[in-house]
Image 1: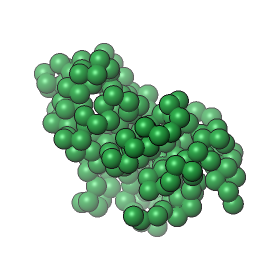
Image 2 (image 1 turned 120 degrees about the vertical axis):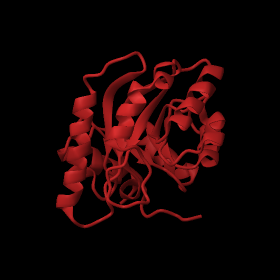
Image 3 (image 1 turned 45 degrees about the vertical axis):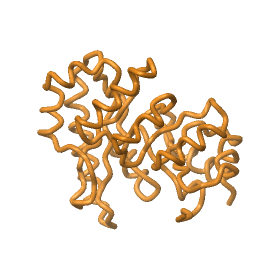
Length: 222
């Protein structure tokens, strides 16, 4: 099936209120343009250099999401244009995003990454760390970032019960935190689910899914 057909199939499955982030990492511009011509406007990249190169050469109405682990020293390269940063996993990183956003006279939307998986390899906050962050004076002074949601990745397993349980726990936290509403913390986005588990994630309340291989075919490892 073509990229266009893959996209149409996925969009026929996911509800209208769910944002589809087409994960275009390692994919050539031609593949992204094929998805663009089929109506897709939201794309996710996980490497800063690749993201900036694609931003430079592709249509300017694309919404670029930084979905990978982001190092503080790379924030300056994407701060002028990035639409949403998915993986905020420390106060240090958030402060750097704030600083670079201020330099670019922007407010940058971010998701806090929660550690919900049983694997140690995933980055992210736990519940206590998130609450500490939100209560800290440091966070309250960050005028140029806005936390618009939470993001989490489930354990890589075939056990659907475990995946559902992890997604459920993140949805519960999202619902609790949603009642907090400040100028830089207004939750509307719950980003859970990738090519292998996005249907489960939507069932558990996700309203943003990141899908790569199901759109573009298997990944090309450079």
